Image (cartoon, rainbow, N blue to C red; front, side, top):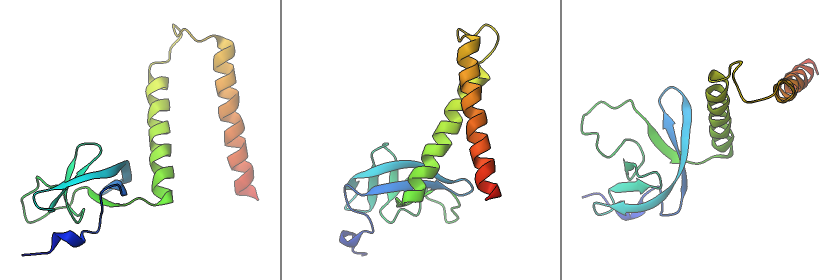
Length: 126
């Protein structure tokens, strides 16, 4: 029987859930281990094999799904950027002429976007 007392993860570790295609998807913390240390429960409620290589409920022999790794700094930035883009898209999707935002407020938002785009362009040219 394998020794699960030497898991790659410990309670309290910060971990990143990765999808196969999209990279870092979300951040979580190891909450506890169940099933004599074979199942790792994360702060989002999801359950994983103790090694993080597959979801606990998966029972097949071929697996190409999400996996868990220790969190790296670039994971935090990737997830934050992904969430910001999603929030902006969701907000912009509902934007129309009946919006309660004034034309001045919308202009300030647009000015900020243009300034950020110009800064990126200037950095690329350097």
